[in-house]
Length: 197
Image (cartoon, rainbow, N blue to C red; front, side):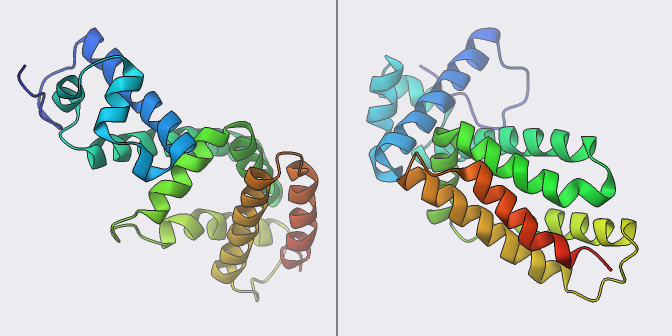
């Protein structure tokens, strides 16, 4: 079997796209169930019902398939949050961001675990600003829409709110009965005074 090079030119066939999607979904399941270490190429192949060589046809390494799974989970999160935020007016966008982030991560616990595991096993190439900058921009725009002067540091506020979201989601992963919707509303109540003049 000839290896399909990652980033190879030319369109993937329908069968190749379906197999890659299956491998990404299986990897998300394994990482969520067993952690990064439990998602070996052999385990991915076994769960997909194919050979290890067939996995290697689509992804050259375990890290490549895990990166693809992380990218898939992150893209779903970003699309969901972006849609919700764009539907809100500028003054309400930080609250929409918090609600949609917490809601999406609550509704997709396997994706949540995939994202967390990928962050833990990050090779140092990620940019921390990629996490806080979108929310900081929403905070600045909300302040402007409410007539605020922006005295409070939007970056720091975004970092603090992001940490709050992370903590809410982590608590829900440990205690499935934890009311994340109520926690998100409490976080919004804490954020709201920083947005007003």
